[in-house]
Image (cartoon, rainbow, N blue to C red; front, side, top):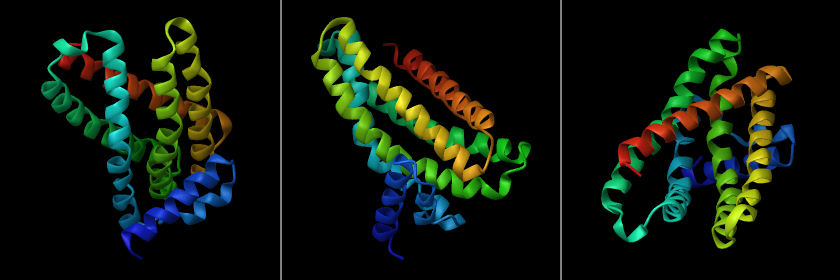
Length: 190
């Protein structure tokens, strides 16, 4: 199967999972080759991620005084780290919870789901940036909650685990993401 066709199937599977349809898992290439190809999602998501970072920085700092080249370099490095840290941690966590046989399929679904998540996050962040004050901040709250629920559903379905364990995995992912983002913000100095 070509990469483009595999990506199209995977995106349809991610869409089905977003509709809470467990059969979405059948559209993913849950092989080692599919695992590595699922990181193509990072390239698809990258432009949206860059826009999100840009929106965040222009809200918190004087955009004209920022060294955008240095920021881009730092964010690119930490973007790569963020795309590898969670799958690496899950390699060990799935063994710990006796679900290592489901690891590859889970990461494939998790990676492709990032495209769907960006498709929701980006418009919400743009809308948030247009609305001043606390009202703008409230826009992201239901989007973040829906994204967390989506990740929970994927973990629960792909790993065949309990609700609580799936919630723990989502919490761990969130904490790890905040940790990496915090280090990136410290390194870039903004």
